[in-house]
Length: 246
Ligand SMILES: Nc1ncnc2c1ncn2[C@@H]1O[C@H](COP(=O)(O)OP(=O)(O)OP(=O)(O)O)[C@@H](O)[C@H]1O
Ligand SMILES: [Mg+2]
Image 1: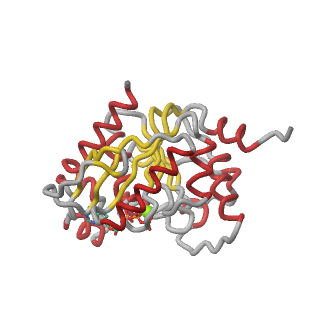
Image 2: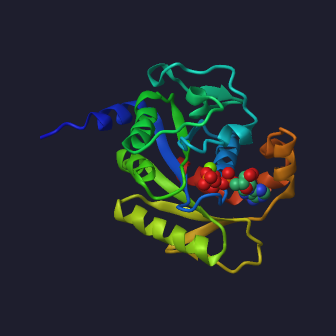
């Protein structure tokens, strides 16, 4: 029998984390990073919260947080999360900086698994993961390795094409035994009459918020600069908070 050392390394790195909630979508550009970062930002008011950006090509949560790293780790073995206003945070930007990261083939999944294996998390009630787009190994393997403590939130636009992709993702997650807690319809008018994505309930409908665009353009954290973001994300924040504290 082959021993899976990854399993031990990842279990050990996450041993102090009670629950992991991964924000996924299948489709790219639908607002995962915006929702994942906001969820973590508001949860930190009442829970010990972490945020892990697992999008090794498109890492962007630091931009939403307006965080400019003043350090760069030389190797993954020495990398530890940083604190941003009480949020425990790790992103590939702490390893790679603001450069392109042209990894190919199996090296891509190895990099994701190295981040999961080597970055040790402190005592946390919940860790939010901003997942890369798609349904490839970089999404499926973290779910498999964290199976005992992970569940997901699916973000989608309210159009038929995004909804199709999101429904297929929900099916795939179910097949591998990962529960989807709820769906967020992003860039969605409150009058839109969609209550489920596949068999998952819609927990929040978030419209296009102009203040998000303008605050990001001015280098300001939209979760602080735009009070309406807190209001729109409140249903999903409360929903996750209840699930985590139950
Ligand atoms: N509700 C919203 N109101 C205004 N702007 C938004 C909203 N949701 C997302 N955006 C903007 O849309 C862009 C795409 O969002 P985001 O980066 O979160 O998508 P993503 O799903 O993480 O993309 P990727 O698949 O590339 O990781 C960003 O510039 C973000 O600021
Ligand atoms: Mg993203």
